[in-house]
Length: 468
Image (cartoon, helix red, strand yellow):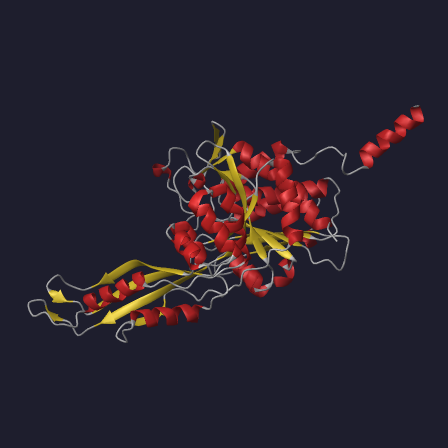
Protein backbone atom coordinates (compact mmCIF):
# COMPACT_ATOMS: atom_id res chain seq x y z
CA UNK A 1 0.00 0.00 0.00
CA UNK A 2 2.83 2.40 0.85
CA UNK A 3 4.57 1.65 -2.46
CA UNK A 4 1.34 2.12 -4.38
CA UNK A 5 0.70 5.40 -2.61
CA UNK A 6 4.21 6.60 -3.37
CA UNK A 7 3.83 5.68 -7.05
CA UNK A 8 0.49 7.48 -7.20
CA UNK A 9 2.03 10.57 -5.63
CA UNK A 10 4.93 10.50 -8.08
CA UNK A 11 2.55 10.27 -11.01
CA UNK A 12 0.54 13.15 -9.63
CA UNK A 13 3.61 15.37 -9.44
CA UNK A 14 5.03 14.28 -12.79
CA UNK A 15 1.89 14.47 -14.90
CA UNK A 16 1.49 17.88 -16.59
CA UNK A 17 -2.26 17.38 -16.64
CA UNK A 18 -2.36 16.86 -12.86
CA UNK A 19 0.40 19.29 -11.88
CA UNK A 20 -0.48 22.27 -9.72
CA UNK A 21 -1.62 25.36 -11.59
CA UNK A 22 1.23 27.88 -11.29
CA UNK A 23 -0.26 30.49 -13.61
CA UNK A 24 -1.17 32.85 -10.76
CA UNK A 25 2.04 32.56 -8.75
CA UNK A 26 4.21 35.58 -7.95
CA UNK A 27 1.45 38.19 -7.97
CA UNK A 28 3.29 40.44 -5.52
CA UNK A 29 6.33 40.58 -7.79
CA UNK A 30 4.12 41.29 -10.78
CA UNK A 31 2.38 44.13 -8.97
CA UNK A 32 5.75 45.67 -8.12
CA UNK A 33 6.90 45.44 -11.75
CA UNK A 34 3.60 46.86 -12.99
CA UNK A 35 3.72 49.73 -10.49
CA UNK A 36 7.28 50.63 -11.48
CA UNK A 37 6.34 50.60 -15.15
CA UNK A 38 3.25 52.80 -14.72
CA UNK A 39 5.13 55.26 -12.53
CA UNK A 40 7.96 55.61 -15.05
CA UNK A 41 6.69 58.44 -17.26
CA UNK A 42 7.14 57.39 -20.90
CA UNK A 43 5.09 60.12 -22.62
CA UNK A 44 7.16 61.44 -25.51
CA UNK A 45 7.30 65.07 -24.35
CA UNK A 46 8.99 64.57 -20.99
CA UNK A 47 9.25 60.83 -20.36
CA UNK A 48 11.79 58.11 -21.10
CA UNK A 49 11.16 54.69 -22.59
CA UNK A 50 14.86 54.04 -22.13
CA UNK A 51 14.48 54.31 -18.34
CA UNK A 52 11.55 51.88 -18.42
CA UNK A 53 13.52 49.41 -20.57
CA UNK A 54 16.51 49.65 -18.23
CA UNK A 55 14.27 48.87 -15.24
CA UNK A 56 12.88 45.78 -16.96
CA UNK A 57 16.38 44.66 -17.91
CA UNK A 58 17.45 44.92 -14.27
CA UNK A 59 14.56 42.66 -13.24
CA UNK A 60 15.34 40.15 -16.00
CA UNK A 61 18.98 39.94 -14.93
CA UNK A 62 17.96 39.47 -11.30
CA UNK A 63 15.88 36.49 -12.46
CA UNK A 64 18.93 34.91 -14.10
CA UNK A 65 18.96 36.25 -17.67
CA UNK A 66 22.45 36.64 -19.08
CA UNK A 67 23.72 39.84 -20.69
CA UNK A 68 23.90 37.92 -23.99
CA UNK A 69 20.14 37.24 -23.77
CA UNK A 70 19.22 40.93 -23.48
CA UNK A 71 19.61 43.70 -26.06
CA UNK A 72 19.08 47.28 -24.91
CA UNK A 73 18.94 49.85 -27.70
CA UNK A 74 18.42 53.59 -28.11
CA UNK A 75 19.11 55.86 -31.10
CA UNK A 76 21.77 58.56 -30.72
CA UNK A 77 19.27 61.11 -32.03
CA UNK A 78 16.62 60.14 -29.47
CA UNK A 79 18.34 58.66 -26.41
CA UNK A 80 15.10 58.53 -24.39
CA UNK A 81 13.27 56.46 -27.03
CA UNK A 82 15.07 53.21 -26.31
CA UNK A 83 13.76 49.71 -25.91
CA UNK A 84 14.64 46.15 -25.08
CA UNK A 85 14.74 42.69 -26.64
CA UNK A 86 15.12 39.65 -24.38
CA UNK A 87 15.21 35.97 -25.29
CA UNK A 88 14.36 32.86 -23.29
CA UNK A 89 16.24 30.25 -25.39
CA UNK A 90 14.58 27.03 -26.51
CA UNK A 91 16.08 23.57 -26.64
CA UNK A 92 15.36 22.96 -30.34
CA UNK A 93 18.03 24.68 -32.48
CA UNK A 94 15.78 24.50 -35.54
CA UNK A 95 12.80 26.26 -33.95
CA UNK A 96 12.31 29.93 -34.83
CA UNK A 97 10.38 31.08 -31.80
CA UNK A 98 7.53 33.28 -30.63
CA UNK A 99 7.72 37.07 -30.32
CA UNK A 100 5.88 38.96 -27.61
CA UNK A 101 5.63 42.60 -28.70
CA UNK A 102 4.48 45.54 -26.56
CA UNK A 103 5.14 49.27 -26.51
CA UNK A 104 6.38 51.23 -23.53
CA UNK A 105 5.37 54.73 -24.62
CA UNK A 106 2.03 56.23 -23.64
CA UNK A 107 -0.25 59.04 -24.77
CA UNK A 108 0.33 62.38 -23.03
CA UNK A 109 -1.55 62.90 -19.73
CA UNK A 110 -1.83 66.14 -17.74
CA UNK A 111 -2.25 65.91 -13.98
CA UNK A 112 -4.68 68.83 -13.87
CA UNK A 113 -7.09 67.00 -16.20
CA UNK A 114 -7.15 63.71 -14.31
CA UNK A 115 -9.04 62.85 -11.14
CA UNK A 116 -5.95 60.93 -10.01
CA UNK A 117 -2.25 61.34 -10.78
CA UNK A 118 -1.85 59.59 -14.17
CA UNK A 119 1.67 58.46 -13.31
CA UNK A 120 0.84 56.93 -9.95
CA UNK A 121 -0.66 53.45 -9.98
CA UNK A 122 -3.88 53.61 -7.99
CA UNK A 123 -6.08 50.64 -7.08
CA UNK A 124 -9.64 51.67 -6.34
CA UNK A 125 -13.00 49.85 -6.44
CA UNK A 126 -11.54 46.85 -8.26
CA UNK A 127 -9.82 48.97 -10.92
CA UNK A 128 -6.22 49.99 -11.62
CA UNK A 129 -5.95 53.65 -12.69
CA UNK A 130 -3.00 55.24 -14.46
CA UNK A 131 -1.76 56.21 -17.89
CA UNK A 132 -0.91 53.05 -19.79
CA UNK A 133 -2.54 50.51 -17.45
CA UNK A 134 -4.41 49.18 -20.50
CA UNK A 135 -2.49 50.63 -23.43
CA UNK A 136 0.03 49.05 -23.36
CA UNK A 137 1.88 48.74 -20.08
CA UNK A 138 -0.49 46.12 -18.71
CA UNK A 139 0.53 43.82 -21.55
CA UNK A 140 4.20 44.85 -21.35
CA UNK A 141 4.23 44.00 -17.64
CA UNK A 142 2.52 40.64 -18.24
CA UNK A 143 5.06 39.71 -20.94
CA UNK A 144 8.11 40.75 -18.90
CA UNK A 145 6.75 38.98 -15.81
CA UNK A 146 6.13 35.89 -17.95
CA UNK A 147 9.80 35.57 -18.95
CA UNK A 148 10.92 36.20 -15.39
CA UNK A 149 8.66 33.46 -14.02
CA UNK A 150 9.64 30.98 -16.72
CA UNK A 151 13.34 31.50 -15.99
CA UNK A 152 12.94 31.27 -12.21
CA UNK A 153 10.89 28.11 -12.56
CA UNK A 154 13.55 26.51 -14.76
CA UNK A 155 11.22 26.19 -17.73
CA UNK A 156 13.02 25.55 -21.03
CA UNK A 157 10.66 25.74 -24.03
CA UNK A 158 11.10 23.97 -27.33
CA UNK A 159 10.88 27.27 -29.20
CA UNK A 160 12.60 30.44 -28.00
CA UNK A 161 10.28 33.00 -26.42
CA UNK A 162 11.32 36.53 -27.40
CA UNK A 163 10.24 39.79 -25.83
CA UNK A 164 10.41 43.18 -27.58
CA UNK A 165 9.47 46.31 -25.63
CA UNK A 166 9.62 49.35 -27.86
CA UNK A 167 8.90 53.07 -28.04
CA UNK A 168 7.21 55.29 -30.63
CA UNK A 169 3.87 53.57 -31.20
CA UNK A 170 1.79 56.41 -29.80
CA UNK A 171 3.47 59.36 -31.54
CA UNK A 172 3.86 59.93 -35.29
CA UNK A 173 7.15 61.14 -36.71
CA UNK A 174 9.41 59.90 -33.91
CA UNK A 175 11.80 56.95 -33.62
CA UNK A 176 9.74 53.78 -33.72
CA UNK A 177 11.46 50.84 -32.08
CA UNK A 178 9.33 48.14 -33.71
CA UNK A 179 10.01 49.58 -37.16
CA UNK A 180 13.73 49.89 -36.42
CA UNK A 181 13.98 46.32 -35.15
CA UNK A 182 12.04 44.97 -38.13
CA UNK A 183 14.23 46.77 -40.66
CA UNK A 184 17.61 46.73 -38.88
CA UNK A 185 17.70 43.80 -36.45
CA UNK A 186 15.15 41.29 -37.62
CA UNK A 187 17.57 38.61 -36.39
CA UNK A 188 16.86 39.68 -32.80
CA UNK A 189 13.10 39.31 -33.13
CA UNK A 190 12.56 36.78 -35.94
CA UNK A 191 9.79 34.36 -35.05
CA UNK A 192 7.17 32.02 -36.43
CA UNK A 193 4.62 34.59 -35.30
CA UNK A 194 4.20 37.50 -32.91
CA UNK A 195 1.57 38.48 -30.35
CA UNK A 196 0.93 42.20 -30.02
CA UNK A 197 -1.78 44.45 -28.54
CA UNK A 198 -5.15 45.55 -30.03
CA UNK A 199 -8.04 43.11 -29.48
CA UNK A 200 -9.40 42.27 -26.04
CA UNK A 201 -12.20 40.48 -24.27
CA UNK A 202 -15.51 42.28 -24.73
CA UNK A 203 -17.86 42.93 -21.80
CA UNK A 204 -21.44 44.13 -22.10
CA UNK A 205 -22.95 46.99 -20.07
CA UNK A 206 -23.66 44.59 -17.20
CA UNK A 207 -20.12 43.20 -17.02
CA UNK A 208 -20.96 39.90 -18.75
CA UNK A 209 -18.39 38.40 -21.09
CA UNK A 210 -19.51 38.59 -24.72
CA UNK A 211 -16.48 37.39 -26.68
CA UNK A 212 -12.72 37.11 -26.60
CA UNK A 213 -11.34 38.76 -29.72
CA UNK A 214 -8.07 38.09 -31.50
CA UNK A 215 -6.86 40.67 -34.02
CA UNK A 216 -5.86 38.68 -37.09
CA UNK A 217 -5.48 41.62 -39.48
CA UNK A 218 -5.12 45.34 -39.29
CA UNK A 219 -5.70 48.21 -41.61
CA UNK A 220 -2.93 50.52 -42.76
CA UNK A 221 -2.87 54.16 -41.69
CA UNK A 222 -2.24 56.72 -44.45
CA UNK A 223 -2.80 60.48 -44.72
CA UNK A 224 -3.23 62.25 -48.05
CA UNK A 225 -2.96 65.99 -48.62
CA UNK A 226 -5.35 67.70 -51.03
CA UNK A 227 -4.40 71.19 -52.25
CA UNK A 228 -6.07 73.79 -54.45
CA UNK A 229 -4.38 77.02 -55.48
CA UNK A 230 -5.50 80.24 -57.12
CA UNK A 231 -4.08 83.72 -57.89
CA UNK A 232 -6.66 85.13 -55.47
CA UNK A 233 -7.78 88.74 -55.52
CA UNK A 234 -10.08 91.18 -53.78
CA UNK A 235 -13.16 89.67 -52.16
CA UNK A 236 -15.33 92.42 -53.64
CA UNK A 237 -14.76 90.86 -57.07
CA UNK A 238 -15.51 87.14 -56.71
CA UNK A 239 -14.34 84.85 -59.48
CA UNK A 240 -15.66 81.41 -60.47
CA UNK A 241 -12.43 79.53 -59.74
CA UNK A 242 -12.41 79.98 -55.97
CA UNK A 243 -9.90 77.65 -54.25
CA UNK A 244 -12.23 77.10 -51.29
CA UNK A 245 -15.17 76.10 -53.45
CA UNK A 246 -12.95 73.83 -55.53
CA UNK A 247 -11.78 72.11 -52.35
CA UNK A 248 -15.35 71.83 -51.06
CA UNK A 249 -16.42 70.05 -54.24
CA UNK A 250 -13.44 67.71 -53.99
CA UNK A 251 -14.27 66.79 -50.40
CA UNK A 252 -17.91 66.21 -51.34
CA UNK A 253 -16.72 63.63 -53.86
CA UNK A 254 -14.43 61.99 -51.32
CA UNK A 255 -17.39 61.71 -48.95
CA UNK A 256 -19.59 60.17 -51.64
CA UNK A 257 -17.04 57.59 -52.80
CA UNK A 258 -17.21 54.09 -51.31
CA UNK A 259 -14.31 51.73 -51.74
CA UNK A 260 -15.15 48.18 -52.85
CA UNK A 261 -15.89 45.45 -50.32
CA UNK A 262 -13.00 43.12 -49.52
CA UNK A 263 -12.63 40.10 -47.24
CA UNK A 264 -9.89 38.17 -45.44
CA UNK A 265 -9.69 35.38 -42.86
CA UNK A 266 -10.13 37.83 -39.99
CA UNK A 267 -13.27 39.55 -41.27
CA UNK A 268 -14.86 36.34 -42.52
CA UNK A 269 -14.19 34.70 -39.16
CA UNK A 270 -15.50 37.72 -37.27
CA UNK A 271 -18.84 37.85 -39.06
CA UNK A 272 -19.28 34.06 -38.96
CA UNK A 273 -18.67 33.82 -35.20
CA UNK A 274 -20.51 37.00 -34.25
CA UNK A 275 -23.65 36.15 -36.23
CA UNK A 276 -25.24 33.95 -33.51
CA UNK A 277 -24.19 36.42 -30.80
CA UNK A 278 -25.71 39.43 -32.57
CA UNK A 279 -28.78 37.57 -33.88
CA UNK A 280 -31.71 39.15 -35.70
CA UNK A 281 -31.45 40.70 -39.15
CA UNK A 282 -27.87 41.87 -38.55
CA UNK A 283 -26.84 38.38 -37.44
CA UNK A 284 -28.39 36.90 -40.56
CA UNK A 285 -26.52 39.44 -42.70
CA UNK A 286 -23.29 38.47 -40.96
CA UNK A 287 -23.92 34.79 -41.61
CA UNK A 288 -24.76 35.43 -45.27
CA UNK A 289 -21.68 37.61 -45.78
CA UNK A 290 -19.35 35.06 -44.18
CA UNK A 291 -20.75 32.32 -46.41
CA UNK A 292 -20.64 34.41 -49.59
CA UNK A 293 -18.70 37.69 -49.19
CA UNK A 294 -19.91 38.83 -52.60
CA UNK A 295 -23.49 38.94 -51.34
CA UNK A 296 -24.37 42.56 -52.01
CA UNK A 297 -27.48 42.72 -49.83
CA UNK A 298 -25.63 41.39 -46.77
CA UNK A 299 -22.73 43.80 -47.28
CA UNK A 300 -25.15 46.68 -47.71
CA UNK A 301 -26.87 45.84 -44.43
CA UNK A 302 -23.57 45.60 -42.56
CA UNK A 303 -22.31 48.84 -44.13
CA UNK A 304 -24.95 50.83 -42.23
CA UNK A 305 -23.02 50.30 -39.00
CA UNK A 306 -19.83 52.47 -38.95
CA UNK A 307 -17.78 49.82 -37.10
CA UNK A 308 -18.78 46.99 -39.45
CA UNK A 309 -18.46 49.19 -42.52
CA UNK A 310 -14.86 49.91 -41.50
CA UNK A 311 -14.19 46.15 -41.51
CA UNK A 312 -15.58 45.73 -45.02
CA UNK A 313 -13.51 48.20 -47.01
CA UNK A 314 -10.90 50.92 -47.13
CA UNK A 315 -12.28 54.15 -45.66
CA UNK A 316 -11.13 57.73 -46.24
CA UNK A 317 -12.41 60.80 -44.43
CA UNK A 318 -11.53 64.50 -44.32
CA UNK A 319 -10.06 65.42 -40.93
CA UNK A 320 -8.43 68.86 -41.27
CA UNK A 321 -8.65 71.91 -43.53
CA UNK A 322 -6.79 75.21 -43.73
CA UNK A 323 -6.94 78.00 -46.26
CA UNK A 324 -7.22 81.66 -47.03
CA UNK A 325 -5.04 84.47 -45.76
CA UNK A 326 -7.42 87.36 -45.03
CA UNK A 327 -11.17 87.85 -44.47
CA UNK A 328 -11.34 90.37 -47.34
CA UNK A 329 -9.32 88.42 -49.90
CA UNK A 330 -9.99 85.50 -52.20
CA UNK A 331 -8.13 82.40 -51.00
CA UNK A 332 -4.87 81.67 -52.77
CA UNK A 333 -4.33 78.23 -51.25
CA UNK A 334 -6.45 75.63 -49.46
CA UNK A 335 -5.18 72.38 -47.99
CA UNK A 336 -7.12 69.48 -46.55
CA UNK A 337 -6.03 66.27 -44.87
CA UNK A 338 -7.81 63.08 -45.83
CA UNK A 339 -7.12 60.21 -43.46
CA UNK A 340 -7.42 56.71 -44.92
CA UNK A 341 -7.51 53.35 -43.17
CA UNK A 342 -6.53 50.96 -45.93
CA UNK A 343 -7.72 47.35 -46.16
CA UNK A 344 -4.77 44.98 -45.61
CA UNK A 345 -2.80 44.16 -48.74
CA UNK A 346 -4.05 47.18 -50.72
CA UNK A 347 -1.18 49.32 -52.08
CA UNK A 348 -1.17 52.98 -51.03
CA UNK A 349 -0.80 53.99 -54.70
CA UNK A 350 -4.05 52.19 -55.51
CA UNK A 351 -5.92 54.23 -52.90
CA UNK A 352 -4.36 57.47 -54.16
CA UNK A 353 -5.49 56.65 -57.69
CA UNK A 354 -9.01 55.89 -56.46
CA UNK A 355 -9.18 59.30 -54.75
CA UNK A 356 -7.86 61.01 -57.89
CA UNK A 357 -10.52 59.33 -60.02
CA UNK A 358 -13.31 60.06 -57.54
CA UNK A 359 -12.40 63.76 -57.32
CA UNK A 360 -12.00 64.04 -61.09
CA UNK A 361 -10.42 67.50 -60.99
CA UNK A 362 -6.84 67.96 -62.22
CA UNK A 363 -6.75 71.27 -60.34
CA UNK A 364 -6.76 69.38 -57.04
CA UNK A 365 -3.26 68.17 -56.24
CA UNK A 366 -3.08 64.95 -54.21
CA UNK A 367 0.02 63.88 -52.32
CA UNK A 368 1.08 61.79 -49.35
CA UNK A 369 0.47 63.52 -46.05
CA UNK A 370 2.40 60.98 -43.99
CA UNK A 371 5.22 58.52 -44.55
CA UNK A 372 4.05 55.72 -46.86
CA UNK A 373 2.84 52.76 -44.83
CA UNK A 374 3.67 49.21 -45.91
CA UNK A 375 0.82 47.47 -47.75
CA UNK A 376 0.87 44.72 -45.16
CA UNK A 377 -1.23 41.69 -46.10
CA UNK A 378 -3.38 39.99 -43.50
CA UNK A 379 -1.65 36.86 -42.19
CA UNK A 380 -3.45 33.53 -42.35
CA UNK A 381 -5.21 32.36 -39.19
CA UNK A 382 -4.11 28.70 -38.90
CA UNK A 383 -5.78 26.17 -36.59
CA UNK A 384 -2.53 25.58 -34.67
CA UNK A 385 -2.67 29.22 -33.59
CA UNK A 386 -6.40 29.43 -32.92
CA UNK A 387 -7.05 26.08 -31.20
CA UNK A 388 -4.63 26.54 -28.28
CA UNK A 389 -6.10 29.99 -27.67
CA UNK A 390 -9.64 28.58 -27.72
CA UNK A 391 -8.62 25.90 -25.24
CA UNK A 392 -7.03 28.32 -22.76
CA UNK A 393 -9.89 30.82 -23.07
CA UNK A 394 -12.33 28.00 -22.32
CA UNK A 395 -10.32 27.18 -19.20
CA UNK A 396 -9.81 30.73 -17.90
CA UNK A 397 -13.05 32.27 -19.21
CA UNK A 398 -15.53 29.36 -19.50
CA UNK A 399 -18.23 29.69 -22.13
CA UNK A 400 -16.63 32.65 -23.92
CA UNK A 401 -16.33 32.33 -27.72
CA UNK A 402 -13.07 33.32 -29.44
CA UNK A 403 -13.74 35.71 -32.33
CA UNK A 404 -11.18 36.79 -34.95
CA UNK A 405 -11.35 40.47 -35.85
CA UNK A 406 -9.62 43.11 -37.93
CA UNK A 407 -8.18 46.20 -36.26
CA UNK A 408 -9.48 49.18 -38.22
CA UNK A 409 -6.73 51.41 -36.89
CA UNK A 410 -3.10 50.36 -36.93
CA UNK A 411 -0.33 49.38 -34.52
CA UNK A 412 3.32 48.35 -34.60
CA UNK A 413 2.21 44.98 -35.95
CA UNK A 414 2.28 46.44 -39.47
CA UNK A 415 6.08 46.54 -39.31
CA UNK A 416 6.65 43.00 -38.07
CA UNK A 417 4.08 41.51 -40.44
CA UNK A 418 5.66 43.43 -43.34
CA UNK A 419 9.01 41.65 -42.80
CA UNK A 420 7.47 38.18 -42.66
CA UNK A 421 6.60 37.79 -38.98
CA UNK A 422 2.82 37.16 -38.94
CA UNK A 423 1.52 39.29 -36.10
CA UNK A 424 -1.70 38.82 -34.15
CA UNK A 425 -3.05 40.95 -31.35
CA UNK A 426 -4.95 40.50 -28.10
CA UNK A 427 -4.48 41.92 -24.60
CA UNK A 428 -5.55 38.75 -22.83
CA UNK A 429 -7.94 40.55 -20.52
CA UNK A 430 -11.46 41.95 -20.71
CA UNK A 431 -12.40 45.59 -21.05
CA UNK A 432 -15.52 47.55 -20.15
CA UNK A 433 -17.60 49.06 -22.98
CA UNK A 434 -15.61 52.32 -22.67
CA UNK A 435 -12.48 50.27 -23.52
CA UNK A 436 -10.85 51.39 -20.30
CA UNK A 437 -10.89 54.97 -21.58
CA UNK A 438 -7.66 54.26 -23.43
CA UNK A 439 -6.00 57.52 -24.56
CA UNK A 440 -8.51 59.44 -22.42
CA UNK A 441 -8.77 60.67 -18.86
CA UNK A 442 -8.56 58.26 -15.92
CA UNK A 443 -7.51 55.25 -18.02
CA UNK A 444 -8.34 52.06 -16.15
CA UNK A 445 -8.34 48.27 -16.23
CA UNK A 446 -9.98 45.79 -13.88
CA UNK A 447 -7.61 44.30 -11.31
CA UNK A 448 -9.08 40.82 -11.69
CA UNK A 449 -9.18 41.23 -15.48
CA UNK A 450 -5.46 42.00 -15.58
CA UNK A 451 -4.62 39.08 -13.30
CA UNK A 452 -6.76 36.76 -15.42
CA UNK A 453 -4.87 37.94 -18.50
CA UNK A 454 -1.61 37.16 -16.74
CA UNK A 455 -2.83 33.63 -16.07
CA UNK A 456 -4.01 33.20 -19.65
CA UNK A 457 -0.68 34.17 -21.19
CA UNK A 458 1.27 31.97 -18.78
CA UNK A 459 -0.66 28.92 -19.96
CA UNK A 460 -0.96 29.90 -23.62
CA UNK A 461 2.66 30.76 -24.38
CA UNK A 462 3.76 27.41 -22.99
CA UNK A 463 1.42 25.63 -25.40
CA UNK A 464 2.76 27.66 -28.33
CA UNK A 465 6.38 27.30 -27.28
CA UNK A 466 6.23 23.52 -26.80
CA UNK A 467 4.22 22.59 -29.88
CA UNK A 468 5.93 20.49 -32.56
